[in-house]
Image (tube, rainbow, N blue to C red; front, side):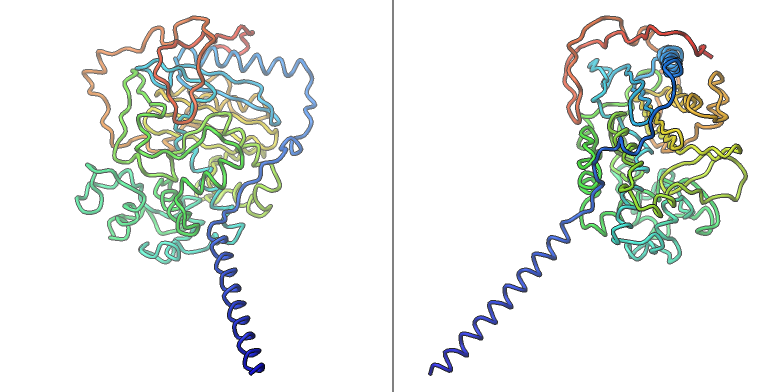
Length: 469
């Protein structure tokens, strides 16, 4: 009897042990599924070399930045923010205009603006972090992660460097079944359209370069597939929260009334349209200060592995001669003198944006605007203040010819105001009335207070070292 009792006790123990082991394995599996790798926040100052410039050189550069802002941005009545940093420290920062023109809500350092195609830099960084942590591989076929994708040649690398040949979704013709321009479209609908054989490739995959927003909309779907989480949640968990980018988020159409608006040159609000729920290629709202936090993290040895960082910053399209190229989520200018600039422009509705990462001299230029003024792109030419880059400081037209491209969805499907209406409209002569009010409430993420506060006069009183072109 005692022997049978002992056997029964052992069986019960083994059964409980098995149940416990299975329970532990289950919870470990759940934990793995819920875990996402994160970009590390650390003291990034350790990655910047000591500034050896003299006081006079620093004052001269500061004067030049002040003069640029006064002679380029203020006369053009730019609505937006300009931030310039050197070796991780902000050396210039200023803001103009309104987050909401109708309510006269002032735009300031805490106001998130749609960064348009600069979103691609962040999407690519997250994809590469997932590659580093073995969630996927650069040479994975897109069809491995998105089974309905219609070919077996296109890889994740082809999407990142725009060598897929895929057509731009913003030019998909209306199709009542697959692409209804009268209804809100999504990333999934882009995939459905392609899976139905509706898209015509520009060229055979891997044989040339063609900038296409479709690539990054598909990358967002792949991020969701391998992490089992929505894109906005992944971006927040992996990137925004760890780097304390507190005023950065992924836009949803439900947020349209609460975010900063965008405007035509004639101060007419640019209405949202059926493409405004597509993300990955665009739809991140951020501030210059938050983008600087991301930029500083790029210098860290923990940002990405040495190999992946090198691949990110390498050019992949040399079929045509020229200084421009594209890496993995970042544009390159490779000059004949051996200098390289990393950058990305953006354009979505009235939002014009520029981001420059000058790695050799460790400088950063971030210009975000929510009113359709090309002078936002002029900020790129400030690169010439930091190194021997063949970029003119005093010839705006030459800069625009070299740098400004339709980087995002410039020719979107929103109808511009009728020509006869535009003919009767003129830019405000005094868009930013002068006053000295100091009690402006910061406009934070998804918080646009209804108030009628005019922005303070921000005309810098510095030497005019750059003449207005």
